[in-house]
Every structure is written in structure tokens, then in C-alpha cells.
Length: 375
Ligand SMILES: *Cc1c(COP(=O)(O)O)cnc(C)c1O
Image (cartoon, rainbow, N blue to C red):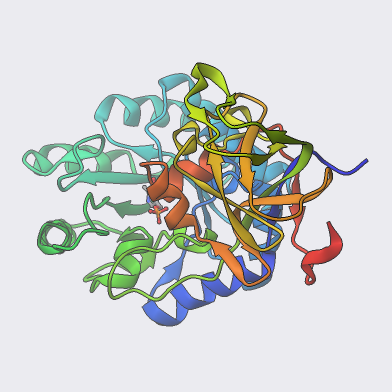
């Protein structure tokens, strides 16, 4: 039985998008693909399989469980965990040989303690985040002299400083002034302090920054959304489309003038209309905001979504022929027509990241076939 709704992932496109980043930043910067949130909703296993031939230096995730999932997939390169962790997770990260992010002295103490109890011969790697303006995590620059001394003090023999990084808040905006100032603060810091190991990873850039800004002292970048087909603003290259979101028509009805559809009866047929009920809803991650506002592609033609989107179904108005079993595209290409990730996100009033992260576990993730007619 073929699926009612599914996600198709073009592995080759993910890899080519990574190579685009690589050719843009040059050989001087290592590339650390961000694969948090189950590979931006596309399936970490599929994404890692797609990226492995490009031999990334490391991978980035947000949580200890995501890191352990990569280890279970056989990933042997460093795995960096970027979200500040609750203290209990630090020992788990140490056991899985993940690279935790440290933003405060309390966590540093917990990690140093975990290192004392670790039986591995190698010191535990960790990275330090500094806050240059993002405001959510990272050591403050104002008292750097104080905390840096402690970081250096613990950084041997049980621990090893793997890297230092910061995060930019507006690298995708029209005005890059604030992003440049954040990079300056980062460069001033790494230029001023003593004791950063010569092999430490220094990084500031998400996708947008990697493709739109000069990276200063950094020797690595952390692209995410661009790898998965998300555009990152003016002046940057356009990524290849990676993901398609499709579902099947499960019912077709001829609506009489004045008939209504969906919760709240927010849409009313103006004349005789043909409605196709499609087996996908907000429970699958189709944003509810697209009700009466978004589009679908059916037999290569744009068809409006009518009425509110339900948890499991959505209804589209069809101008031509349609049959139960037809596949309907909400994201990605269908023949000559295409709904880009950025367009879908804008229609839903959000960002590409949230659209992908919202694709639910109910949807199987399939490899995209060369020919689109395999479905
Ligand atoms: C998610 C994340 C990134 C990647 O950002 P994109 O906008 O998806 O490229 C980079 N760095 C950190 C710390 C992140 O959390």
C-alpha cells in the first residue's frame, strides 16, 4: 500500500548544496553540517548518508539524544552539541564522546567532574560559546578575563578545549552591520586571550553568514538550512531544492453553490466547484496557516487550499480533472510547477526552518527518485 502522505528527500541535492558552501568559503574553513532536529525534519539517517561521501569534519546537533542517534548511525567524526545542556546531560555527553557547549562556570565544573570519572584515556572535548549579541547563551564578554582563566585552568588534563564560537542574530537580514560587529567582537576576543589551542575550531557562521559575510578569524562554518534547500537572503547563491511534501487525493466531490468546507465553515463555494480531499493535515506538519491562503500542485497545476486545514486532511479546489489516488504537492516540484521552501514558509508566516522542523513523525521519509513518476 502506497503512503497517504510522505516527504521525498533528494540526497544528491543536499550534498551539492554542501559543496556550494564549501566552494564559497574556500579551503580555509572546515564545514560542520548542522543536522539537529532529525536533520531539519528530513531524517538524520538520510541526511548523514547523503553527506558522508563529502566527508564533513564534524556534525552539529542540539541535544545529547540527537548526538547519540548519530553515533548509533555509525558516525565517527566529532559531534558537537550546540544547545546549553541541563547538568545531568553533560555526563551522558561525556560517555558518548560528544562535544558539549559550555556557557557558564557551573556547567564547566560539572563537566570537569565528569572528566575525573571518565575512564577513557583521551581528555574530554568541549567547546566554549561566547555571547556577542544573540543573548540566549554564551559567556559574557564583559567579564572574559575572569571566566577565561577558569576555562584554561580546567582545560587539562581531563578536558580539552575543542573550539570557541559565537552565533549571529541577523546574518540573513538586509543590513549586515550588526553581524559584522558581532564578528569583530569575536575576533577581538580570540585575538586578545592566551591559550586557545592552535588546532581549536573557531566559528561564527550559520548558512546565511557563511554565504554573505567575511568570516574574520573563523576557520569553520556551521551551515544548516541552506543544505536543505532554504534560501538565505540577497547576494547568496540559490540552493538546489531538496525536499518535496506530497499526499494523495482520497475523495473528490462536486460542491453545490453555497456549500461550505472545513471547521468554522470559513470557505463557501461561489458556483459549482470540484473539491479534492487530500490525506494530509497540520498533524503531518502542513502549516494550519495555509488554510484559505496556500496552494497545492495537482497534475502540474496550482490549486488553492480551501477552508481550514484539519489535523489529518486538507481540501483543494480543482479546475480540471482529478481522481482518487492522484498525488498532490504542497512543497517542491510537480512537472514544470514548483512551490519553493521559502514561498511556503512565507505563505505560512514563518521561516523555512520551522516548516521543515514541523514535518511530523507520521510522514515516511523517502529517497527522491530521479523520475517523478515513481509515486
Ligand atoms: C541551527 C544552528 C545553525 C544553523 O543555522 P541555519 O540558519 O540553519 O544555517 C548554526 N549554528 C547554531 C549554533 C545553530 O543552532
